[in-house]
Image 1: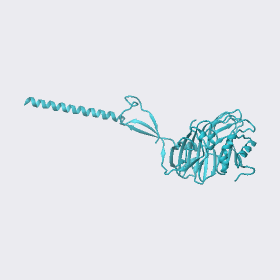
Image 2: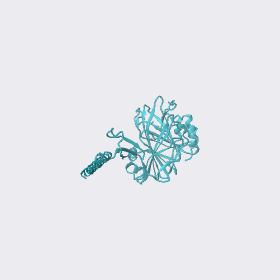
Image 3: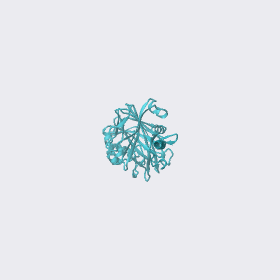
Image 4: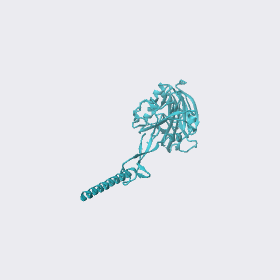
Length: 359
């Protein structure tokens, strides 16, 4: 899979009551389950996380393909969540901010890609409320763009599954077991149906960005449910906080890689998300070759220093002056110096012989 930002989510359910669940198509969030006899794939996921020490806000966007007309997933959150549509302008703005810089490095002697051999080439170098009786409570339900959103509390994973099934969702047994740690911690849930506003239109292309906000004194990114994914996963995060952030551990994946780190002054959609205050942006990529090894949620912490970092694309070129390679000028100068020295030596010897002959 290409770079995705998975996340935090686990797709779980079918929309039609009593329908059979078709095989899950893996995505960064674990498994997205469409309606019967359909398929859906997440071509790309992008996720932006803002944290100010008291509250956390996550904006995610799916780009999907397939022929499903319904699909669903569930997201655990550590506190009472509010849900709305996000600003799609966040993603191109962050992509532009974290784009690698282009620089040139020079070298002296020609290489096999230089004249008189060949042409030069580019190289890439890195320069990073308690549960309601009986056991499930419905905090709210709303229609947001292409999403039908239910905000739930639960004190029992089996009761949560029963509620979902009775309301048109079917929850796989294995996922109920994976939800138990969240139930034990008294987390809440955002259950989402992906359903196009135009009846009968398949889920395809970029969906509306979804924004989820909740109070949290620690920066947490739910990942545990992604362990149910059937194919390798990748995580990409844009983190906006007071300092440069890093995952506390790899949680069973490859070592997280920082692709950008730097303090920015937000404008446009970013200013609306951060309140217009300067903020530190950290972009993080991570691969999960074996999702079953994921052993928890990401907890992010501030690094010891706010060291800036930005990837760079270096163009290597032979050193020139006025368009002429310096090595060529140097060699030519050396040859001229040798030639002049040789001429002086010959002239000196010739004069010496003439004087010796006239003596």
